[in-house]
Length: 196
Image (cartoon, rainbow, N blue to C red):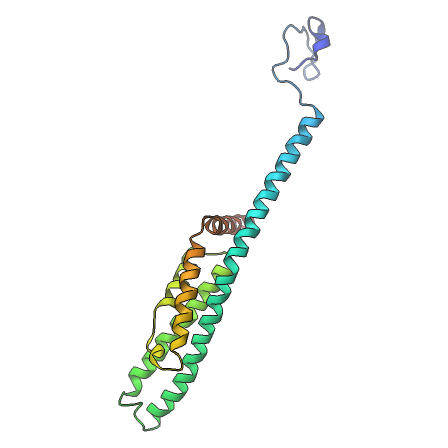
């Protein structure tokens, strides 16, 4: 039991068990002063503000390339839609699609639609700092050239894909961004645990 310094050597009564004893040693733990508590609170607030600044900086780095991936993925999706409409009507309308059958053209466009959709989904996960893996996947899927980039009116799209994909890969591997993604995943895990 901690005894005030002025009562050392005197007979005191224990408030818990009501036994009396002579206090003969100094308290082992020194009581903290109120200003020490204030210093601790200020340190906690400073640390919290530094973490919030780091979080905001990481989001500021992450959002532009993620939005760029979403835009390029959506453009690719739209281009695929237009090209599938053009080539699809040619292939199924009797023109033969330039010598190809309808099945290979349909298969190609399905693969491209899936690729564009996965790239946009991954970029959305990256935008919200939810998944490192989805961000890397979206970046790589955007970089991979497709056959639609050989036409003169869509060739420029691949240069956008390449630039934005490399930019997104560089940003998602930034240490602050990876820290942010880990923090967000930890928060999500804690929220799921609290729900259960």
